[in-house]
Length: 184
Picture 1 (cartoon, rainbow, N blue to C red):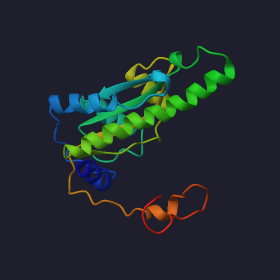
Picture 2: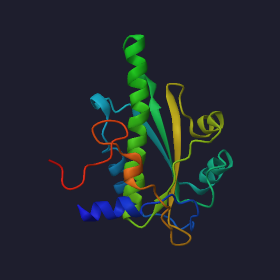
Picture 3: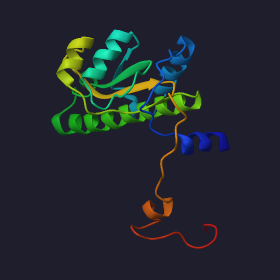
Picture 4: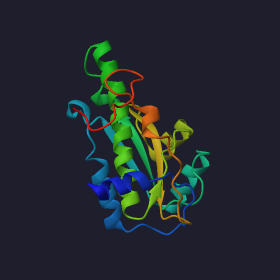
């Protein structure tokens, strides 16, 4: 458990990449971790486009101000609307909203797996969707949600400061701090 906590605590956003390629076997492990994320009602209403070809990565960078440097790959994480739109309106809407969260959890798995292997990445939501759709041939029922550049760090990453957990966690009711000593 302490190894997992070390990975969680030390992971940080990486924006500056060395440009060094990532081995195929490592990429496969990252993708396996990504699709192992929890998914509500096992809908798995996600799709991913993994872009490794340098010219295509360069073009994706041009469509997004949030991608800086030269990542080895970019994962475009998408919601598959064909798996969320099959039920009556209000239910379909809730499944769609939850599926967006599931895509984000898959991206977190990707980022944690990358960090555990000495790589890094950054979820990017600012991109020109129409241009990304055209470049990657993404059909209408697939909604690009995040682009995630991944690669070797150009310099050692420095973890960002985090708020103390007692500032953001309430116990039992809103605003209640933990009682002194172990929980009863």
